[in-house]
Figure (cartoon, rainbow, N blue to C red):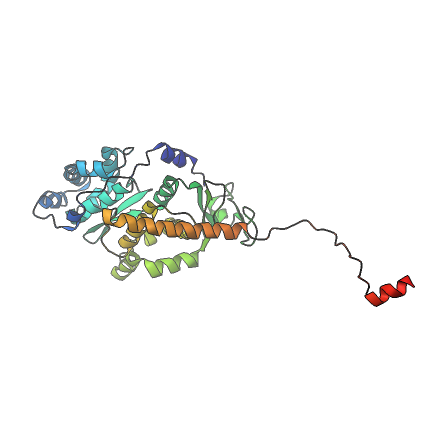
Length: 335
């Protein structure tokens, strides 16, 4: 799909890293002694009233969010984006709600349902980066020229031949003139990048079976939803979106990574595992950068291997060389 608008917006925005949050240590502390009564009171309200009460509570931490957010995102717009989700989030612990939103803010992602979501897991609020959030951080790294991610329907025209040279190895022509019914079900998800230097990454292709295997192995949120009978995880409610996101996440093995993108993967994995999502603490920066550099080297090796593949050459007429005569034969010829 075309992401030129997003690319232009990200390039135009500042790339300055958010300042390290001075309240990292306090994020895991229980705030029941401070303002939880107000948040718990809002849980007794309904709809807009509950959202407004929770929003007023969050606005008291406006300075914290402002410090965490990059300069091109206004704190009011950031908090307004999560407003529609607040009636359900007021049942979360205040500490986890602040933590999830601050984590989202540090990545410069808006919790608008497209770039990121703040989701309730029991009494915990969890930051969940979505596919567009990964795409935005890929552009922000400065190493990626364009990102392409999509779903292939049964009625689409497509071809995947990994041994062919790029870009002939993969094509997808969506049957946009057909009705949704005629296009058929989704059969594959894919993702690839064109690098800033003109090279193209390996194409990641995932079947539905691949996506289900990823879900079953890594998503504790899915397992918890299955066991509780609620079936309310994103894998239940929007399987295709998680399918696309899984293809994008697999790109980290073949695309140069920034420390910020490594941190996003870790925060996402922590949320899936039900662990605390604290990122960008100063002590972690060197470790994250080392992981990013290692991933970058793997991606470069992948590109070198792809470029070194033998390419088809035009057929040449074989030139027949004359046979060399033995010394005895040459003597006989001179006689």
